[in-house]
Length: 173
Image (cartoon, rainbow, N blue to C red; front, side, top):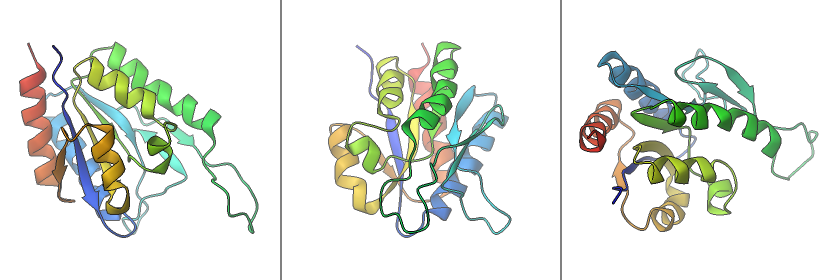
């Protein structure tokens, strides 16, 4: 039986601290020789994450994921087609034997069974640990998604890296 191994860096506010923690944890485990991959929001010069873009953490490829709805629009800007292009990075990394996958966040789209939901499920079904960020307002949805089996972490890179290392050790045969 495959063990379900997922963690969420829980944040309040804009989530810049969680995005930074994920990037730093990614770099730390990669430096340890762990085959880490994922899609993360890039950080600007002030350390704020750029919500409209995802970057392949291992390869550097950048993806714009928002559609331009105009300045007065109140609708969801997320473009499912553009997100699907980006998601190919995660599927490829899983197929190529990644030890762990980093996801930029789990949010409303995933709660509604959209977004990167398929990639989350494929990874954990294959026994690949997954770490993401979750805004506190979506925490109940994330808990439901992972059946209460997920680990909740503070927005701290050392805590995220420690969890990632331990999850990879448990997942390796």
